[in-house]
Length: 191
Image 1 (spheres, rainbow, N blue to C red):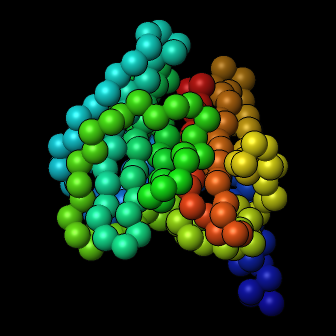
Image 2 (cartoon, one colour):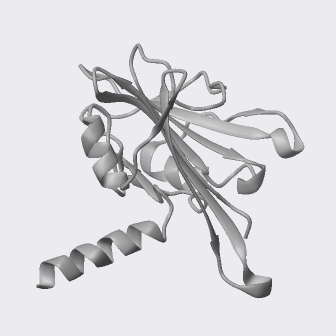
Image 3 (cartoon, one colour):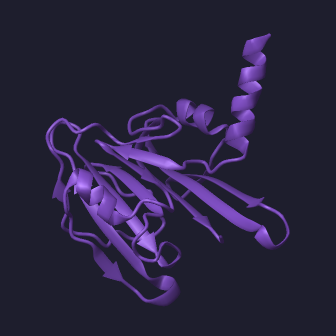
């Protein structure tokens, strides 16, 4: 009897939170909307930040790359809502694969991570090369396919009255032969 109750609590907790709230890359855990570039640089090393656009279209992006048989590039991005400093989006891209992100990549000089750095994993346990069925089980959602990318999205209102705000989250995936080869995830809130 305890197991069904615990399962219901886990589903309820997942329903009231963003699709992904944190991504861990090597020793760095990135809380979307909260972690600044500087905190990641302390754990993964300094990487150049490329900036483009202005006002609502402003973007700041940095990247880290792994070496070895499963080379991966991780793009970390902020925008106006993150003040250009707090990471709002994380993209993981397998070598030879196009990004799953909606916007074009702007960072061009990536810092190489130490050999053997742990692969990126979301707080839902999603990582590159995972099967689509497992991704959808962990997200409690089926995606919508469009132009080679599958989009999972969630929007919700939080708080009441003057303290009410909106939270939008997304998880965009590029699948190849039923496995994740690139993902882009982010959270934006109006608080």
